[in-house]
Image (cartoon, rainbow, N blue to C red):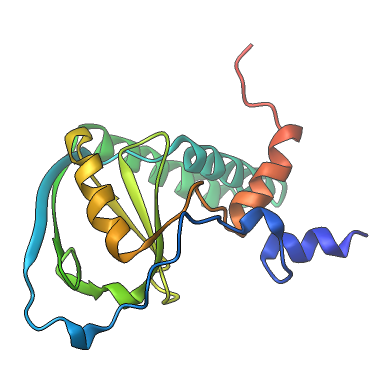
Length: 193
């Protein structure tokens, strides 16, 4: 049995695929240097609720399918019906609703849905390639990553502001679940024929 694969998959050993290169290292943020909070930029975004990157949709689909197969083999029909009804209800609720988000960036941090995070709570940021979303990794376990939506016209302005205080990852970093799905994906063909 390949234990190196298992320890890499759950993130217990060092894996070279999860290392994210950065453009340059910023100097340490010192909150005592900032006297007064000043708003640098704020924007509103209207997003439909079903905006998930394609990568996460396929991950959820694979895990959900495996869970359903397991439940069917164990003859847990009640849980199969429960899961399918939750998926159906989620599909109905997210198909028509749009959410409006407001974000604010200050000289000493970010206001994220009413919770203020100072710059020293973040590790780095990156742009998702398939959606207008910025991922900001935090030093805390929960939340480990903040997802910030933006409009196309705000991209350059946000990149300039964030690059002053945070490191920028050149590629989207992978966590252990992404690495596991990438290794399983070649064996499962989800394309329509």
